[in-house]
Image 1 (cartoon, each protein chain N blue to C red):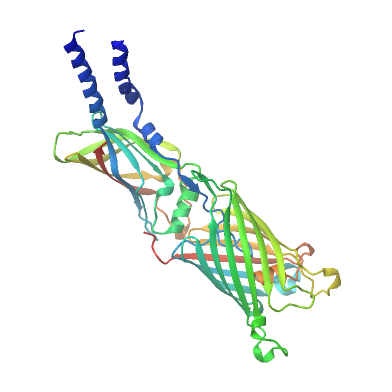
Image 2: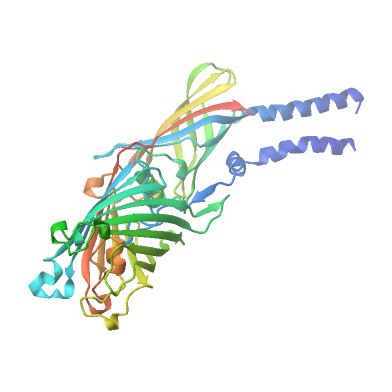
Length: 181
Length: 297
C-alpha cells in the first residue's frame, strides 16, 4: 500500500464513522399522548419523558417510555391506570421498534409516510402499521402520527360497569422532533 | 500492524451496526427511583387510617356507618335498627399533606386531622423499605350540652388528641402490611382510665382481584384498664376489624365487621365496649367518593 492509498483509506474510514453518527437522529422532544371517548368522562394522558432514535439512512425508528410517566388531569385515574389497567409494576415500559417507509430525506415540506413495526404495551408485542407525517426543516425533523390501539389486543382488561364506561380503544398521538446527535 | 490499526478504526462501525435502536435506548435510560403507589385502596383501613393521603387538589367525601351489634337478635333486626355515623371530608393540600374534618354521631364529636406522608417506599436509584405517614388529630365532644354538664365540667374537657405514625410496606402488588404506633391524650377521663394512652395497631390488605381486597386492622391498647375490676358497662376491648374493599372508579366501598362503633381514635381505641370475640360484632361500611377539584397540570 502506498502512502497515498493508505491515507485515502483512513480518510474513508473516518468519513464513514462521522457519517454514521450523523445518520442517527435523537428526539429532543418526544410526546406520546392518548385519548379515549368515554360515555361519562373522556380520558386523556400525556407522557413527555419518551426517548427515541431515528436512523435516517435505513429508516429504522424506536421509542421507549415508562408507563408511570403518563400524566393524567385526574390523579386518581392515573393511579388506576398504573395499578389496575396497565399494571406498571409488572410491565413498566412500553416501546416501539420498526421502520418508516416512503421517506425522501432530501425533500422539503410535509411528507406522508408509513411506519411498520412492533409495538409493546402491557407486556404484549403486536405488529402494527401506522400512518404519519415527516417534515424536514434544516437539521430538525418533525414526526407526527396518530393511530388506534385496541385494549383487547394488549390484554388490557377494563371492567364494564355502567357508570364507568371506558372505551375499548384509545387514540394514540405521537409528536416527535429529532435532530442529529 | 497497519491492518490492526485499520481494524480498530473500523470496529466501532460493526458494534454500532449490530446494536438495535431499542437496545440502545434501553441502555441509555438511567436507573430511576420507583415509588410504591396504591399501597392501600383508601385513606382508611377499617376504623383507622392508612398511610395513604389524598392527591393535591382532590377532595374525598367519606361516609362511615356502623350498625348495632349483630347479636342484638331479630328484635334489633341484627343491629340494622341502630346507626353510628361519621360524615367526613379529606382534602389533599399537596400530594403528601392532607386535611380532614368530620362529624360523628357517637358523643356528637367533631374531629380534624392533619396527615403528612413523611417517607415513601421506593426502589431503584433510591431504596427505602417503607412508607411512613404521620397524623395529628383533635376531637371535640359536643355532648353533653353545657346546660346538662355536671358541676365543674369545662369545655376543654371535651377535647382529646391523637398522634399516630403509620408505617407500611407494600410487599407485592397484592400484599401490604401496616403498623400504627399511637398515642391518645384525653383531657377528661373516667377514674379508672389514664389520660395518656398508648396503643399499637397492626393491619394489612390482601388483594383478591384488581378491584377487591380483604383487609384487617387490630389496635392493642397498652394503657387499657384491667377489665376484671370493672363493671360490664366500663369494660374496654381492643378494636378489631375485618373488611372487604371494593373499588369502582372514583368510589371505594369498604364493608366491615368490627366491635367498635366510634370513628374517632379516642372512641375506637380507648372506648370500645364490645367484645368482638364474644360475638358483639357490628356490620358497617365506609363509602368514599373522590372529586378532583383542581386539575393536575
